[in-house]
Amino acid sequence: MRSRPLVVDALIAAALTAVALLLGPDAARQGQDQLDATAYVLVVLVHLPLVLRVRCPTVVCCVVHATWLTYIVAGYWPVVCSFGPMLAVYTVASLRGPRSAVPCAALMGGTWLLAGAGNPTDSWPSVVGQAVVYPAVLWRFGVLARRSAELARQLHLEQAARARREVTEERERIARELHDVVAHHLSVISVQTGLARFVFDSDRHTARSALDIIEATGREALDELRRTLSVLRTDDDGAPSGPMPGLAGLAEMADRVRAGGLPVTLTIEGMPRPLAPGVDLCAFRVVQEALTNVLKHAAAESAEIRLRYEPHQVTVSVTDDGQGVILDRERAVRGHGLLGMRERAKLYGGQIAIGPQDRGGFAVRLTLPTSTTAARQEDDATT
Image (cartoon, rainbow, N blue to C red; front, side, top):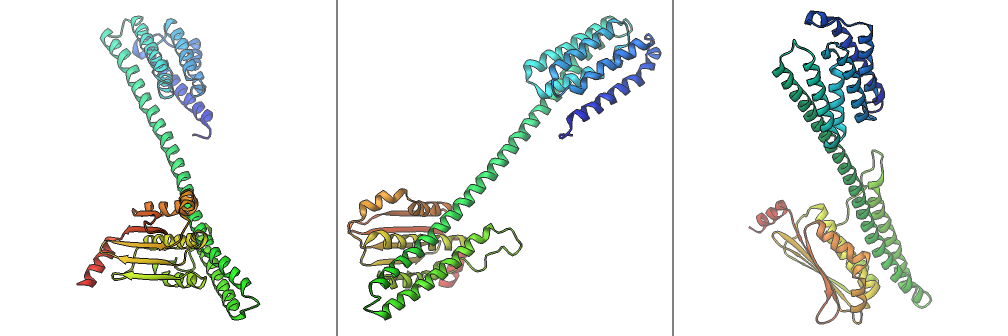
């Protein structure tokens, strides 16, 4: 019906015309004049414009009522041609505002009164009641149909906007993952490459160890990129090929950064427990990004990772003793790395503090709420 409205309206007009023509012979039984050829021609002309009722509803309504009025003035039974004007009024009310719908409904009511005035067999109170009730009911149903159509269009627009927003959020999530993976691993590779170049002629063993770390780091980066980009696959086997990284990999991350020349200590407080995958990944990525910033910007002599498990939350912090980098860090707050940290913390209902320390250096502290199930598991374990 939506794809071919003209065809549908033509079928409706033909159906109403057929009903009117079949009703014509009943005029004599109702005490009215028998319909002749002229009357039947007028019946067809009243309903014929309904084919274009959707394209120009107000004009069609006026033409239909003008033809119906001609039919009434000619002395024929008005009821035969009443279906077309009713549909025309309903169409105007369903497609146009009150400024067009109310005058069209009044036009129908006035025409109905004129038809009743010229027919002495009809009861005048009945004619008045019909002239008021019929247009009002048609106008009301048309308004309800128009509002339903507007709500449907609004719902469609909201669904489309929601779909676009979900696509944008998914793109941002993938962009954050890619940034964290690439920035961290390339920072480690860059440091190890510089070390290997520096000692390549004087200390072959150290250079070989640096190359081994570069190889392992590159392989790990490819694995994480493959898992991250697997969400873009559309085939059936598009599930991630392995678990996403989490806090269990902090020790390995610390070893890799330590091998790059930055002493890193890892301190774990409380009883380790499984966390929700999103929370686990969020905490891991924040630590990863913080260490990446230490390697790239801090010129620090040491760094510390502190992980604390609490009954209903987990807290992780990365601090360093870098000097002379506070202003640079503050300028970088709008960068993708620190912005990604804040977005991750907000996504999982956590709190993050990023800024310089009073005693020098820089600190990133993240607090994430854990699930009720994980909190209950820890409570049971401690008792």
